[in-house]
Amino acid sequence: MQLNLTFEQLQRWSSGITAAVSATLPEEISAHFTAGARDLTASDQVYIGLYLRDSASITIYERDPDDWNRNYDTRKYRQDPFFRLFAGSRQDFLLPLSALDKGDFHTSAYYRDFYEPSGSFDEITGVFNFDRNAAGFVTYLRRRGARPFGVEELAMAEATADATRRVLERLWRQWRPPGETPLSLADLSGRERQIALLLIDGGCAKAISRTLSISPGTVRNHIKSVYRKLGIHSQVELMAAARGGDLSLPSLT
Image 1: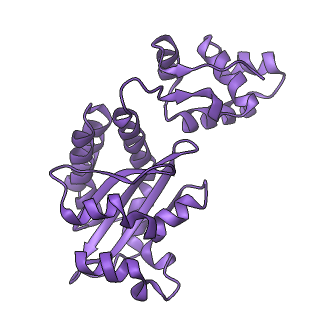
Image 2: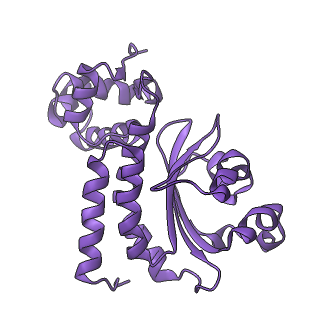
Image 3: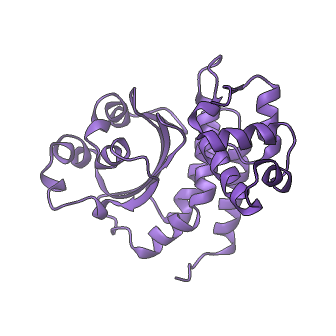
């Protein structure tokens, strides 16, 4: 599908992403990202935050949170069909509300007690897993009176999903409490841990392939998986985390 974008829209989106991935405060990340994302998808509101399997949802606001979202983060998130899909799966997804509506959404307690009173009408939500416990989410929202999201807006969200994931990974790293180890090789498979440690030692894909007697292509695929699971983007970033004590290095077992 050809996406109809103006130069100004692309410029605002690009500037927002650049600012978001270099911001140090979660609120700044949210503000920079959501400004461009609202324009790109013609959304009334865009929210980003974190889904955690062992604690409450966390929405990161570009300004003061409202009572509606406080209610979501403290209680209602468990009834959200998007959170339920996250809780029951380890797979990333980017879906319109219609994909999860089995004909009962408008009669559900979540709709009656939360969604309808908020004025919400339609949404597209993406969830990107970081580790066994956490994922970042983005929600593109339209209020009552707007038209539903269509295939063009969904295609736009899909086309920008890689950049969105990068912003959410940045948000995850910046939000984590001080003193908590943000990265752990324990979340990797045995082969991935081997490759991660060789990368930390300065190895390249060709050298690692010779050391482990596997093809360079296989090594590169494992490297991509290592970066995705750890929420980083380069060998330099991995080595810096190891040197700075921000990476847990279990022994190879």
